[in-house]
Length: 48
Image (spheres, rainbow, N blue to C red):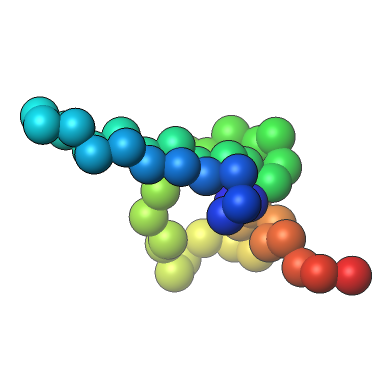
């Protein structure tokens, strides 16, 4: 996720959250699963 590109909006009936992906991969879930293999986890964006 690229925090600088994310945004949120609070409305009277809902909260909209838009997260910008660092890589164009498909996420199967938003929750972390400890049993997932390292090769299936998305890459984290690290400063170079």
